[in-house]
Amino acid sequence: RRDRTAGFAVLRGLERVSRNAGLRCRLEELRLPWADVTVDVAHNPDGIRVATEAYRGGAGRGVEVAVFGAMKEKDVPGILRLLKNVSRVVVAVRPHTTRAATVRTIVQAGKALGMTVLPGGSVKQGIRAARKIAGGATRGGKPRILIIGSHYVAGEALLALEKTP
Image 1 (cartoon, rainbow, N blue to C red):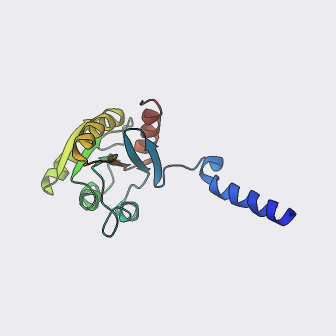
Image 2 (cartoon, rainbow, N blue to C red):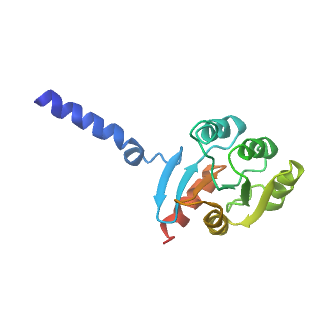
Image 3 (tube, helix red, strand yellow):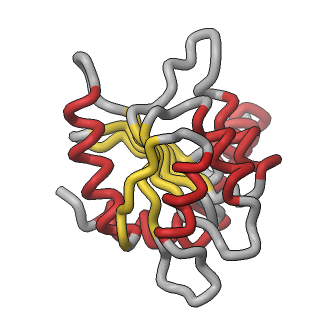
């Protein structure tokens, strides 16, 4: 009996490791009334590749829209090429830091790649735009939205989503 109880406690602890440790936003799934949202802190091509793998091929049906922001020094075109594989529309955002790439820079990089990259403004504004786009793009069921690009983007997204009905 004691062994079972200890084993159960270990399993419960593992199930709650993200919450208990404060580690969040690595393929974190949020089931909201209006969409299924994945928030990820991936911010380079290798991280983006891992994060988007779940949405490509096989059972993965992609996402209706991706919300993306990055720091100036990141490989924005390389990241956008990978996002193109999982989303037809990307909303470019700029988190509140001087290190961030501008929305214009992201939109221009997407245009050069032949992608639909729309200006979203702040992370909060970009989520609102994504919600409108995704709501009209899905055929039954809840739309899927991916929010990705940096710790700054993920942190601001969580704050905005906590206040979104």
